[in-house]
Length: 223
Image (cartoon, rainbow, N blue to C red):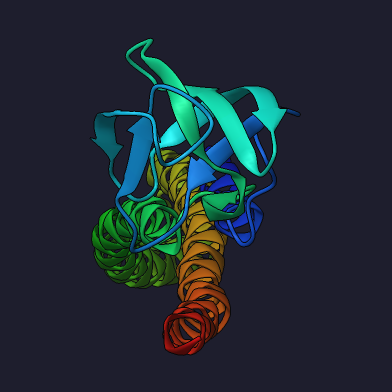
C-alpha cells in the first residue's frame, strides 16, 4: 500500500506542474528563450549590469514606467522591462521537472515489475507444494481407510490421523500465503497501470503546451 501511495503522489505532482502557479505574489521569471538585460536604472540609457538567462527566477521590488526593479537569486538588484517578465516558470524548466518526476515513476515501475515477477514465481512454487501436499493427504486417507476396514492397526490409524491433520494445516497455511501473494500481485498490477496512466497524462498535457508556447514565441518575434 505504501508503494501505491508513492505512485499516486508522483502522479499528483505531475498534474500540479502543468501549469505551475507563481510561487509568491511578487515572484516572476525571465521569459522563455530570452536573455534579458539587467540595467542599473529604469531605462535603456542605464548601463547593463548583467544578462539574466531565460527562466531565471527574480523577486520584483518596484515598478516604474514599464520597468521593474528585481533581485536575482545571487542578490544582485537591477531593472528589467516588465513586459519581458512572466508569472510562470519557463516551459523548459517545467519540462525538466516533469521529466525528472516521470523518470522517478518509471524507476518505481521497473522495481515493482521485478517484485511482481518474484511474487508470481513464489505463487507457482506454493501451488506446486500445495498439489504435492494434496497428493500426500490422499495417500494418508487411503491408508487410514484400510486400517479402519478391519486391520488391527489402531496405533497406525491414530498416527495417520495426526499426519492427516498436520497436512491439512500445512495446506491451509499454503493456501493463506498464496492468497496474500495474489493480493499483493493485484496491487502491483494496479501500480503498473497507474504509472502508465501518469506517463500518458504527462505527455498529453505538457507536449501540446510546449508546441503552443513555441508558436506563440515565433508569432511575437514576427511582430
